[in-house]
Image (cartoon, one colour):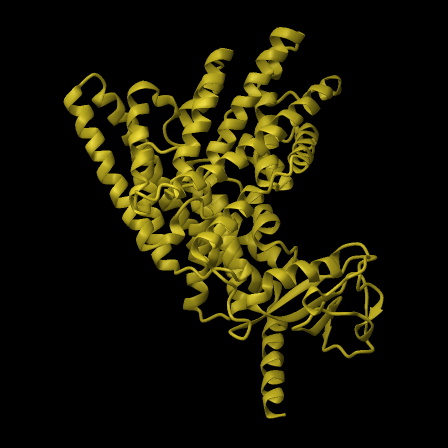
Length: 536
């Protein structure tokens, strides 16, 4: 009885703290997280910008000089060893960082924020100095998330609030990396948090806008992609948009398969220690620096080619294939860096190639070339990441235009469906599975920590218009509060849940992934029979 009293008191205190926070407090929290996470992401972006400039300066400097080339290869080897040691010191910096953040939100992983921030910044910067085909966006999301987590730890927040801080930091990181605050919000909700809680949205939005303001203060107001996109595609060409959606959908499924396959091939190199496998992409970068430097780093040089309208189909296809294979080599090694930007670059080249064929063979006006590029980027993103809403908003913000919203939505939906029909798993889900399999990570002990999570009940869902005692709730969860309008009350068995209610549930952190899936289905999906798998 005494234990139950203590637990009830703890729940009451946590609910009181949660209820007592006004929207202003959520905004203040988001503002603070946006500053901290935004500054970390901006520092990383600045370092990568300098690193890429140094890379191409070095490529020009060593050109044609055998001694300098040998010294550059030795330099790349040293960089690879340093990066490999950093990955060994903190394995969570390997790759993009988005799967690690997702795993943390689901309770699978627990990262050391200070180690991750230090190692990721150094390792990611050195990888770009070496010319690896990696992006800044995934790492920026991880850095922002870890900055948010550290801020929560400093403020001695509980697990529930820590998850919110991580979500806000992730959104701020993407906003600072791409100058895309709305995409930062949507990606956080669609891919990281996976729960559209209105109060979380307020904090994430504030954090993302704050980080975006700081980033624009440093990097300026210009968009990431400088395409002429003022003229929308006419409805008569929407058949081509659908065909393009099919192409990028299949390409996205192919891309995901080979990215995962690349990691598995590296894992089979048993004769080479994991920390030394990163030497392979660094030396490959050295070769490309001599024979094909356009594909080095994230792909900014390739984007410049498209912006300047230097379109030759054979050249585009060659660069597309080489960039794809090179990206597989780099990312599969486990070097710290993302696939976000290289992914969009590949999508843009698919769109440009498609546009050339349409213009030369079908008589399509060449004014629509930029539109095909933009559409292919959005569709390729939707097919690989499987976050179509984020892709639509992201491309709109990166190009600074909403004129092509309908066509972007169409190509994204088609690509999403095609990738699904190809049985392609979302890339970040596949990468998270690989991390867990590699590390043998198991869920945290369900008795370790508890946390509160809130769900918005939708019309005609499993729990809508039912009494609490009429609902078959999952094992190991407890409904502790119902918020209706501006009023919140502790529920009783006879209380009836209504659409629009916010219900707060107490769960074990280690079961968050399982519980979130089940409770989201019960509260937010249309009615269907629920079976508690744990009790069958």
